[in-house]
Amino acid sequence: MIIQNNLLNELNKTNMLYVFLGRSGSGKSTMAQRLVGEFMSRGQKCAIVDQDSYWVKDMPRVDYAGRSVKLYDHVDAVNWNAMFLAISEALQENVHVILTAFLLPVDQCTRLPKKVHTQFIEFVISTEISMARRKKSKAALCEKRGKEFDSVFDAWMVENYTTPLYESWTGDFYEGYMPTMVGAEFPPDTVYSTLKIVLGMKS
Image (cartoon, rainbow, N blue to C red):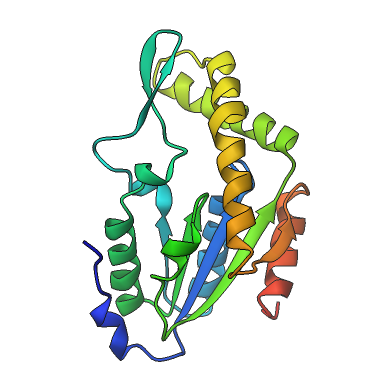
């Protein structure tokens, strides 16, 4: 069932929704956190809705080396209803809302609020840099949890599922929703300065 965002009917165009897109390791979350700090320092309330917080309970699964593993890089892995409801609720309480997402198919883009100004930003990095940053962050997370990071499995997942999904998604996405590209292979301060220029923000 599609949730109708009736609450958004009362919103005016002063509300802003920023959709941050990009590969794993492209800096979506880092830039979102910095932007929240920027808005808060100006006395403007801002919230982040992170797609990674909205997985379905029954995740799609795939066979790997004789075992069944969760497939996060799949359109059916996201609880879209819960995510869009979170966006609706966040827009009731904040002037600015930032959605950070790896995946946002065109049919889901049509569910974004119509009476709120929305700006799409894609943080662009190469596959090689994405893999290096992904490996570093996942290895650190596994270490924190007392587990060993399986780099062979992760590389297999990226090659067979993550990259093909990303490439097919961007091809469809650009047909109707052209994001502004921000090169994300540079140091964070450089990327953030570029982001502020793109968003028309004064220092």
